[in-house]
Image (cartoon, rainbow, N blue to C red; front, top):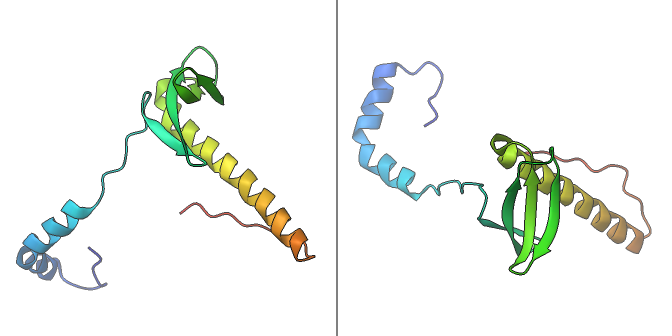
Length: 120
C-alpha cells in the first residue's frame, strides 16, 4: 500500500481495516516466487534444463546433458546457487540481445551506438 505523504497513521489504519477483505483477496492472487533449487527445471531458450548442484568446483555454471535431458550444472556453495543462476541467465540474455541487435542493425544498414541494460 502506498501512502500519500503527510497522511496520519490513524487514517492509514482505518483504510486498511475498511478494505481488509479486498487486500487479502489481492494478496492471495500474487504469485509466489518459484524456489530455485537443485532438481527443478527452468527454461533456457525455451528448453527445460534440470538444475544440478555440484559443490566440488568453484563458482561456474555449465550446460551439460545426461540421459534425461539438458542440465544446468551450478558449482560452488549451495547458498550461492540462486545468484549464480540469475547471473548466468543475465549473461546469456545479454549475449543473445547483442547478437540480435547486430543482426537487425546490419539488415537495415545501421550500427547500434549503445545497448543499455536495466535490471528491474
